[in-house]
Amino acid sequence: NSQIALSEYSRDGDSWIIKINQIFGRSWNRVQKLIGGSIYEVNTPTAVATVRGTTFAIDADASGSAITVDEGEVVARIIETKQEVRIQKQETADISKKEAVVRKIEKLPEWVEKHKREVERETPKIQEIKREIERKVEFRREERPIPTPTPFRPTTTIINTEIERPSPTPTPISKIET
Image 1 (cartoon, rainbow, N blue to C red):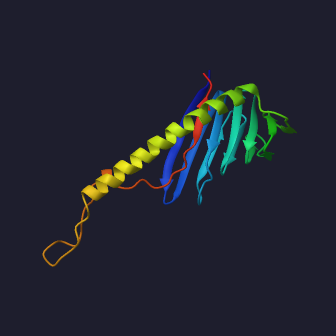
Image 2: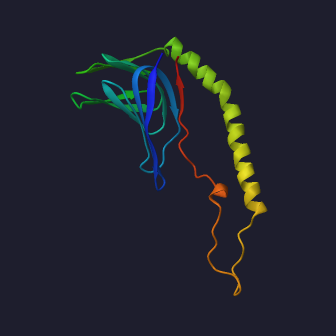
Image 3: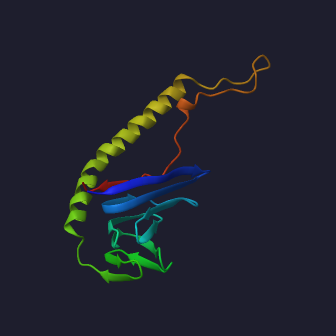
């Protein structure tokens, strides 16, 4: 079992802030390349893992965290000492309250491989749902075009926010082992 909570999910202009508290348990995270000042971070009892676009796993409990990187890079900061460590592709960092040990790995842990296969199998379905939503938004926009201002119409038009085009957002996909 895992205990994970979304502690912040907000937008500031083009930037998104996503912060997750992982008290204990395992998670597999796939984060697309972030734009601007966007932030994606996972807080564990011993470390804060920050990414800009990567695939990684965390196995955490009160005594330590293991962060394994599949793609990209994770910057982890040990909470107690403030020391930062960079974890690259095919590396694992074992992080206690006072230190981090980074080592190369030949293959991902089996639980990570299992979750990775499950998410990859579901990705086409997720992409199709996104495309369907975009088509519906576009259809509604075409159905209710914005009137062109004339001398007899006001120049300000209020648009129903339901038809506002969603902006590109980071779409983290996290798999939580239960």
